[in-house]
Length: 476
Image 1 (cartoon, rainbow, N blue to C red):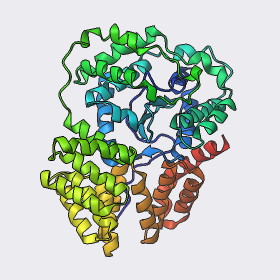
Image 2: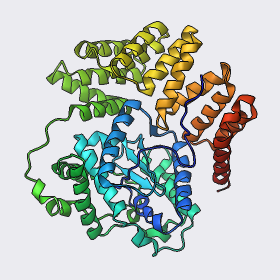
Image 3: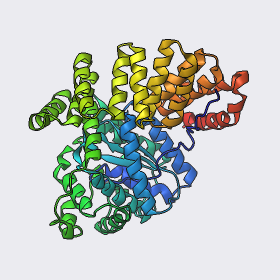
Image 4: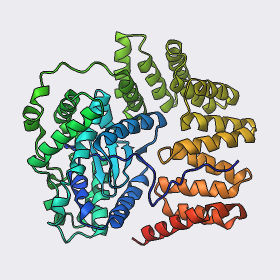
């Protein structure tokens, strides 16, 4: 079977075309978008790729297929309302318990999972996106680029990566990040850090029009900013003061959004809340998540989302028997939920019950779940059963659906094909996998191995461009 893999190019990876600039996030990474019109686009894209590789290799990208699929759909809807963009943007969730989101030059956008956990509905997420897209469409950052002529691309890349590490906290990340920032002459870009209040007001107005055009209620912009203002204490304290300044949001809540302050609260958003439950179960400290979900079950024993989330949490903490109990209780309430069925398939596969896993995954697909998680589960289960023909079919489907947001699918598919008769395809897929996880030397090794094989001729043109980009990156 031929490989249907889209080119997950280091040069221009496919992703959601959006821009995010959260008022309470790291001012540095947001203000540096001013480079967009101060340096050639190719150099801006190069800077973004360098920073993304540094972030990816830390292993903190959140790659759950269900959450990412939903998250991207919201971004795409808002972006469409904002109109045509000049260049692609790439949208990622970051595993972090700090309240933050940030963007770097070249269109790489990162949103902390704790931010998603703090919002209440899809409209609030859309509001944040709309506001930040408005900063980009208003060219706010380009006005500051002319004030800085001393920071090189290399030093800016160091500053951005260092700021990211500091925002993560934990272990010695803060110390490492501060060293990277100081070593990159961060003080030279202080003039580029803060948006003016006029900029904020303009972004508020434009962002509000974008979200309304996308079909959302403007009260959700007020609600989102109010939550961010109230929870601003969660922004990492390791960020230097000069890197975290931004016009206060409280005044804007009392002015720009005054007409929304008295609006009734939005109704509950089950789809968003289910995604938030999933993120909490997969990322929050176990004790905190357990208390939240048990508290909900005490109020409503038929809360399927809370039951399933406790199953995810149990699976995450390796209590497989408890996970099965919660999964079954959730499925009794929602027997045709594809997500629940696929997660049950993961549990069966973990126990090496391959046929049971196939049954769950197949039922998930019958109920409309065609995510890379389900296809990967079927592929691995058929491989365990010794049915390599079906395994190859579903590995191809998993890779096709994974794009650049589920690297596990590429890793497993690459390993399968390198040992099961199509080594060139396997090496090519593994090359793309190592790009996604920030290991350029390993990526180059597999790309070279792919085109060295007779079957690898069809990958030559793509691989040669990727290798040139990797060579440039490694030199920098």
